Amino acid sequence: MASYHIVLADDHAIFRHGLRRILAEDADLEVIGEAKDGLELLTLLNKLSPDLVILDISMPNLGGIEAIHRIKAMRPDVKILMLTMYDRKEYLYEAITAGADGFSLKQGADKDLFNAIAAIRQGNTYVSPLLSKIVQESLFEALRGRKTGESSSLLLTQREKEILKLVAEGRSSREVADLLFISDRTVDWHRANIMKKLGLKNTAELVKYAMNAEFA
Image (cartoon, rainbow, N blue to C red; front, side):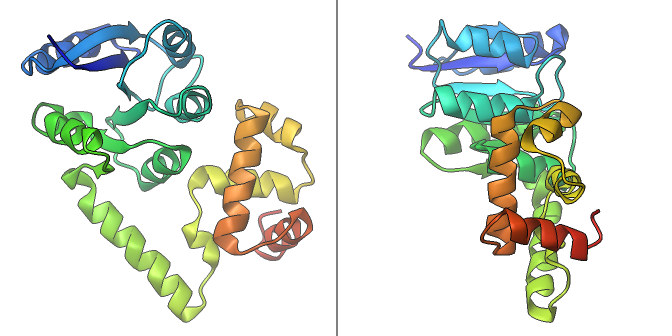
């Protein structure tokens, strides 16, 4: 009997079917549910108790990043593996900072998937080797920025920069949430994360930084 239960979330039924077939190769793994979007996934998690959720970043109704925030808020014990076709560093950063336990690419799913699951089951985080170049480049960017005093905005994800720009315009968390189609809680989480990265103490300092950095 399988001892590790998994829920899949992807808007492509054919991909979910293929993923289920790959996972069936390991008798210790069992797919106990599928969802075609983030909202359906959250509903499913009210009924099921998976050990791991494997989800895509781009889904209708509720995207993968926002889904991660909500899953970790309602079920912090559930592990999350982001499995996507996008190898962009901002997606990697957003997924990990939102609470994902792993990030892998669909392009190498047949080879990489079991390594990712094994690492997560052992309590580790996992990033696909296919993303090693992006991780290394981003690390060097951040370190060079700190050493030479270059703009610390290099440390921010694209989503964080979008939020910072709206904050500089004087937008409230509610307005930012409406404009970006995310929740108030997610906006506040991003604001706190931005302030932590930039070493800022309050909203006034955040707005001042945004304006000085010409985000306004």
